[in-house]
Structures are given as structure tokens and as C-alpha cells.
Length: 204
Image (tube, rainbow, N blue to C red; front, top):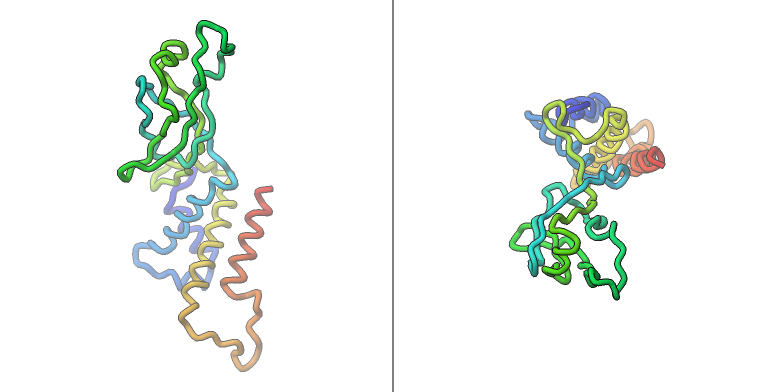
């Protein structure tokens, strides 16, 4: 496994002289690049988890897991096959969306589950959802496998180049040093794109 601090140290070493741009005393700028890489990692290495809530008749909203990115699909009711003429026909099952209510994200059922549906299918609503990745400050708190360390580092390097490109927007750009031209593909913006291309190619 790996920790957030260890990956930030790897990132600093991999940037060589360019690491001098990220000079926060506590390493906050490099950690920021790592955090953004972790945040984006679900796009290429989706993390699917099983969630569950206890249904209450006619209640439409339920708390969402803290790490939920998007709702995937329901397990509730999918293992039973009823026909409309069956006595146990539960009717149309609710659709579920993720919404924000008072600053908190929640699962909203439309329509709300009925007492009849709960009596037939049970109150334990299980579902699949896509979850965000985590990279903690201690061993064992990471959801990213050790074998994916290089891929995550590559994404963090790209993020570092993106930050350098933004930093350079307000600084004068010198196209020549009096001896040679600065190659266009050596600018932070170009390196960001090259690293992102390499990152996306590596996950195919």
C-alpha cells in the first residue's frame, strides 16, 4: 500500500528541478496535486461498492454514503419475478437519483416506496454505487492498489504541470535565451497534455 505523503515525496523526486516551484513548507502544494490525481482516478479505475438503506413506507429520501459519486443500480426487487396479475405484484419500483438537500447529498426515490412494496420485497434496500477513491496519511487507508502507484504518480505529474502552466500565465514569457529557442513541447501546458495522453493510453 502507499500513503498520501509517500506519493507526494515520489512526485517531488520525479519533478527534479521543477519541484522548486512547489515550495510550500508543509508540502501542501504537492499534496494538492496528489489529491487532485486521486479525485480523478475513478474515471479510469472505477470503484463499485454495495450500499444499503432501510426503507420506510412513503419516505422518499435517504442519506447517501459519504464516498458516493453516482448511483449505479438497485438489487432490491430484482431477484423476484412478478407479473401484474400476481397477488404479490409490487407495482412499478421507484427510480433513484442522487440529489442535494440542505447541503447534504441523499438518495431520492420516485415514487416513494409503499407499504405493500416493503411487505413484499423487504425493507432492506441494497444497491450498487460508484465510489470515490481514497489515499490516506497512514498505511491501510488507501483504496488504490500498490500496483497502480505508477499510474497515479503519472496523473499527479500531469496535475503539477497544469499548476505550473497556470502559474506562468501572469509571468513574462521569454521565447529565446539568446542561444537557443525554448521548444514549444517543453512548456508546462504542452507537458500537461503529453502526460495526460500518456495517462489515458496507459489505462486502455
